[in-house]
Length: 199
Image (cartoon, rainbow, N blue to C red; front, side, top):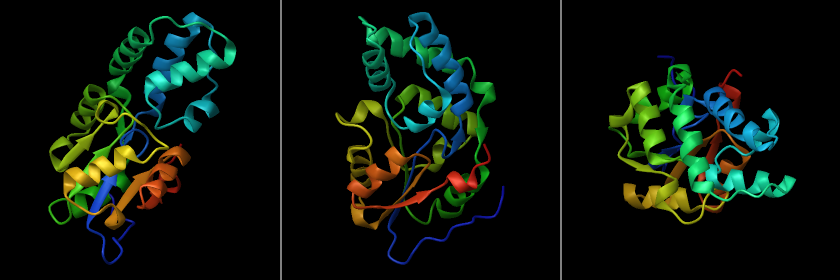
């Protein structure tokens, strides 16, 4: 594993990691699943828009995209299940993002660390298992755990609560503007990992 490129600032009491695009390079697999689903409904989802909406739960993305093009979707829950199931068929394409995992590896057992994601619990669990790191984390917060989602701060505030750490003493690792805005609203420092990730 590569050498950590980051050192916790003085006073840091907890680290919180997004999953998709931060710990794991899942985005190509997610995009394949999205295009397979949405093409049947004639709902466009250009790749740049896909990356811009990173961090939003699947159901929210479906409602936004369908609304923009005037497509009536009658069973969003079924579409979510189909999309997540399709993603899981591409798990072999998921790869670790080594510089971020190196930070988690360096601080696990030293600081409490959590995963906080807009993804669904089963998908995030399977992704972490694919990387062999699920047991590294002291807490995991997913889309099912909060009523509001990124850019609202709830997922990060809940992660801090579960870690037993003051929000202002947490550092969040994220790969999207939406996620970094959620960290800011939570009163947490944010680290943009995109410069660490080769896409």
